[in-house]
Length: 331
Image (cartoon, rainbow, N blue to C red):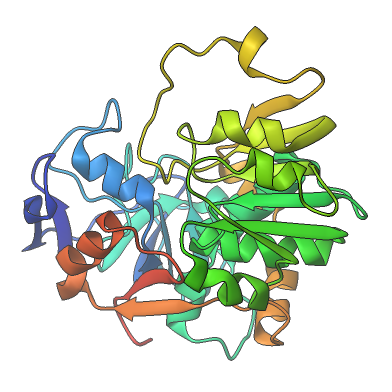
């Protein structure tokens, strides 16, 4: 089978398309013929060498959709899903401990699968969903515990996760939704995806938020990361919560962080990473119906396996505005 192999850590040139043996499912696993996969910053960070414990060469990728091709020969019967069922998977060590989605086939845990309901959505759109929906829904519900009537600010809202978060917040019932962008030209895009207010982000927006008509926010989803999180906590109302989910700013750590002085009184800071249990808790079928019905818009840019270096170059330059996916097979 063809696969994108990261031969070592480094620039995009370390990714080569190679012919490698098709994997064999072990007990508890299924063999998936991959139809498509989403592109994530986690894969860029792994390729760059920022994922501790990952050994190379490695087939990366933390999500995919596909078709069940086989079970282990000694698999117990009956199986949860029949061979030929279209499924989705994400996280659970994929792309790190388990070689996964940048390939034509992969083996994953049967327990970490969701079946894809009958839908008219394209393979490219479906490939964009597993990690995006798991991360966004989990951040808003498990991380922030967003409730109907509360206000939400999404920091780094022009990313695919950010655009999805604006819309899922509306679905949950947020009463006021703000979003940030470094570029004023993207204000209309944010409003088209559900933002009531847009803040142009030069690194500090706390004063702009404080001086806005309605002031601070109950909940804040921090997608830019360590470079802006200490400014984000200043945008939260008393008893407000800031959840750091992304690191779009590219920095993993903060220098000289003193919680007692950096965190405002009565403001809470947490992080969200997500895992298989969060993927299983996701209202997967309901959200797919919402997307199919046009209630949630998922902008997608589609590529092929041969384009993988180009895709990572776009990712390194900032991406934004759409979820990039690779379509491996048309069905």
